[in-house]
Length: 363
Ligand code: SAM
Ligand code: SF4
Image (tube, rainbow, N blue to C red):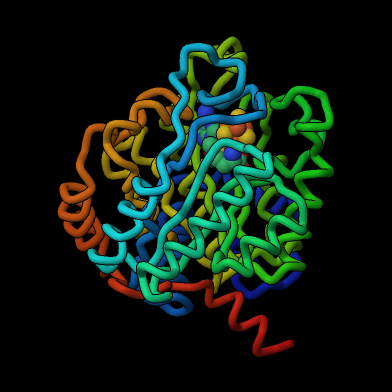
């Protein structure tokens, strides 16, 4: 096993089967993987953990992904969209508390008014933070033109998870129509790259029907796509979704968690200088889940700065953590947690993907 791990680290040719073997590692082998991913993280991206204040802008969504709690057809969700003042206030909070960056996330909406309003917000956020806040968007699939408009307005990173890189699995977890097309999602990732964003993608881990081969291929997909950032985490069931009917097929939750840590460690040794987020879903399973991910490879954390009154309306999955916590409490708690994980917070820094700048240097 150690030979396989070393082969991956040295970037000698390795196969899906090699990665599948590492995903199965236990005991000493698992400890070896995690110690290597920790060393590589420190060598290539350092000990700093960067904040992205997460603003959950709207839970209105035009799509119907089978796994997601805010899907269009979930009638049990009270829909909201933050006012522009609420968004600016949250961004100011991030700026004043030296978060460095924010992420603006939302259900997928492509109306003209939505697009224009995001452009307005980007300009305003840049203005009130005198250009100092970095902005990541996670607003789903849009046209290249829209991506360009938002890029020019000041967004410079974009997160769009491929969810799974295997088309047949993608088609099992989404309705079969043009709005949920695997090719469209891949095209959207290409458009983001073309426009000039630092591009992040990711997958859900432990989906029904998902095999270790699928997950190994997901990692190879990210390497081949030459992504700059990744946000991946366990799939967690939501009771009001069609996919909850398949709960009996799922891996136990602690195995999904374990597998997620191995995926992060593997990606760190495969793509040494990218940014990897420690996602909230990890904390929904294990109270110290995000710290564990930081210790073994992740370097980005997304504290939730959505106004508290909306937090319980953006439930993608059951048992979302910190839904009732104020952003102020969240900082204190995170500081302690990150220190515990051997990291330090990169206050006031954008913490851009080193992979992105290294690529530009070699262009
Ligand atoms: N609507 C945009 C999109 O889909 O790209 C951005 C927001 S969407 C809520 C962000 C991510 O939430 C999705 O990419 C998906 O991976 C994740 N997600 C949705 N439902 C989930 C679940 N039940 N468990 C874990 N992650 C989930
Ligand atoms: Fe909408 Fe994104 Fe949820 Fe799919 S994952 S239903 S696009 S919010």
